[in-house]
Length: 243
Image (cartoon, rainbow, N blue to C red):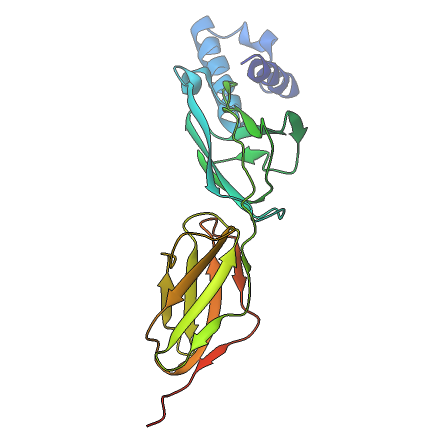
């Protein structure tokens, strides 16, 4: 408000030929007060980004929360997090810290209370925090979010194709549960399996999709961290059984 009244005073000084205080003494005092209030109101309204006491009255930041949407795959910056701001008045100024160190690599402002941020790297403790300051000057800091790297998912060996019955078997390692075997034919039909054939052996899991029709197939393995995927280097072919 002090800034607004200072600008109003400057506004009046620039227009002394039209509205001077000397001239206002010659006018009825009530009319001069109304004129001054009208000019002040116009200055406040025309100031871009200004917020009046009335707009900020009772406004509070209620919650600032960070949550994990996807874990980074291996050491790559491929994670995804969400920022949820409840209360306050936009726009919001954001100050991020990674492991206690301020960074400018993440968004510095937001016009909305919800924000999703991609290409995030994994952290050790204490992880990510964000301090939010709204347009009214209210401030709040989130609890830390530690975003752990998911182990990269990999093929252990070549996929096994059992031709007589149209089965594809894949052995994989890494990733996080649930792991998924995805097999896609040339028409875009997707077959998937999330249940392994048995318990892991030395950290290796086997998955099988049965009774696939004769076709060429693309094979992809995927971790629960959606960014953790790997595609087999070539398509595999199931041939039609000869009679």
